[in-house]
Length: 398
Length: 222
Image (cartoon, rainbow over all chains, first blue to last red; front, top):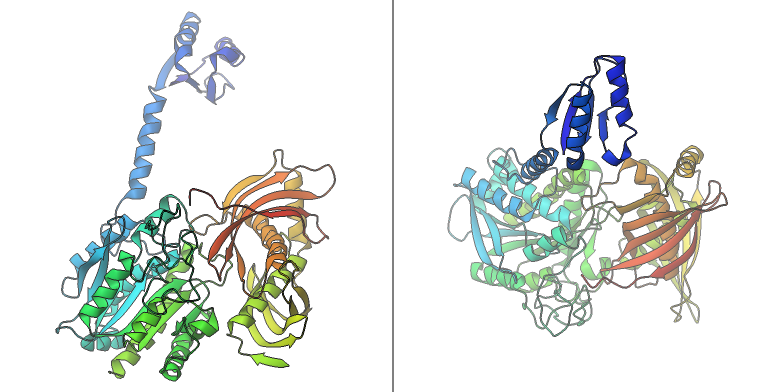
């Protein structure tokens, strides 16, 4: 299609041009309709009508020029430009947009940038591969030493909980920004390392972006069931297979064929065991606004319940201090439900005393579909609670 | 025997969520959404041969104005055994809710004057966005889903409206507005996402009505 510009110079020419509007078979699309001599008339002309129209204009002495030679080419070009600017990978962590949700590629690029910009503080470890062979990356923040006591934080184990991966990205940057000037963080890093796994379930995450925004589980196929995926927060070896998980592969809380069947879970288990010196473990979910400690699989109170309860109280107070966000806290089983095979039940029974789970914003108004503008406030307030936990771990070595 | 529950206990949370959804169904409109802000107090009474009754003191907030809250007392009775009877809910709101006549009328007139029936999908979208003109459609679904949630709740469920997958206006000859919604409910104990169809009728000055609703099968693509 071409776009022609016609400028009728007098009333006679104008009339000739106006007549064209009635010739429906030409399928002319007037971008600027005729309304007076001397005023340009722009018209998009489908290919079959080009010759007849030009012939008509020339026969009547009406001059025209070709404004757009090929409309399709222009549209294609614009399309490509739009896709390119949207998909443009970040160039540095300071130009990265923390106020929006990102794709897996963008987050992986962010990690590499963060490491490149801060090689003395940050390194990237690959702790395994997912079912679909995606790398499982953990960022390590360390000021030195060898096998220092460490804090572990993971986000995105349930892929639909998008505010968690987004918060993980923000935490990573926050640690880099504050590691010298924030007294608390600096003193934590003087004694301890921080491990951060931002996309703990990359297969699920990719699936939420391409196929089903509400996908929770991994993407593994185990039985001859047509249903895919295991709930990675029911797959740990703590009360595995007990009440509080499902043995139906089609269920959202399917525990899997056996404990650690999921490579995403096994990778963390292996890491924790090999490291041997993790002192605090925080697994982050959304939504409900809760801070939880073990147990989920049994009503028996955790031996350290009193201490964990006090830490939670303090952490929640710190979190609320920023924007007034209301959190409840308690053991998993008394606060939400019985859940077996859960992450922090396993880590606690491994001896990691300070094991906590967060359920971030909100309480159901948006649920998993939390507006992007709440990412930063959520991450900011959560960070305050995380610091309380990390400080406590630093001050209470065991 | 009446037993006091810590407000953070899951049983209190579930009964409170149900009461809030019910209140939203009875008082909600395209101009007003109510959500649970906090549980102040909760107690539970086991009544032999009848069921479990919860006494609640709640704070509800106006979804459109977070600073606007009201206190609410509620009683929720979950019937023993029979899964097909909806829980009995009674509630009292202390004080006045903001008047929404203007917003309701604006929405009503806007829809009435549409040339083509309204159609929309994915509210909110994947990133949590709700176009401003869709907010009343969403609040209407919020209120109507309160009915569906109430009818399908037990002591072992907590439902939330996760998303409006699709909504289509159905033209009517009378003065009511009718919308055919396909929503996704998130059930938090099982963590399932449940598609549900509901037909909603509304007119300013009238409470929201759900004339038809049915659970839908999960898609094979999941």
